[in-house]
Image (cartoon, rainbow, N blue to C red):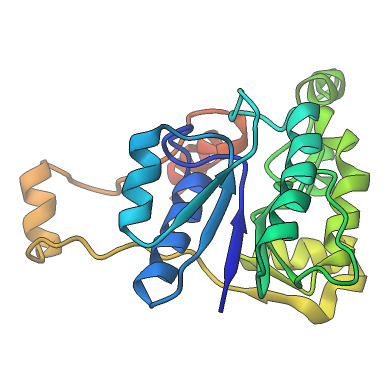
Length: 241
């Protein structure tokens, strides 16, 4: 099977979870005997060579800023996809989130698998379950901070409706899609994210707590400390235990 994986960036651009997930998927496919192709923003030559030695071919979308979904990226990825499909044959295209930009599949295009890591308002106060929790005066801040996402809504819906299969990594996102986009119900599959096993000896829980000097209940959170991650809610909940 020939697979084309599409994402805006790789870990060499942004040290984010989505980018690492995307690279892990590519390397996992290569390790299983496939030869995946990647379409992302340009990468350094040494990174391109490293991926090639691991069985992964990289193609570049000619944009300078890999950190955001700019209008230029949305246009350029569509053109780059068309050029690539004119010379390469793929059995499936697997795209992350908005990575396909303004591209529209044709009748002859391979089926599209779309990975969705959250809906258009997930992790924002614009989400329907969050709006009622906002204090008076917070709505203008929410729109100013996250309203740009709403501009992507038509593009988002189009990608959902053209996908042959939608992959989500949580039941929360599956429920959101089921509620807000009922037409997708038959094609959504939930595949929880995995963590690679560390190549170190197992440490017993009690030994680990003593080594760290931990007593009582502890909270460990890994991620950016900002509103979307909800660390304040976790701390509030922990205080109530």
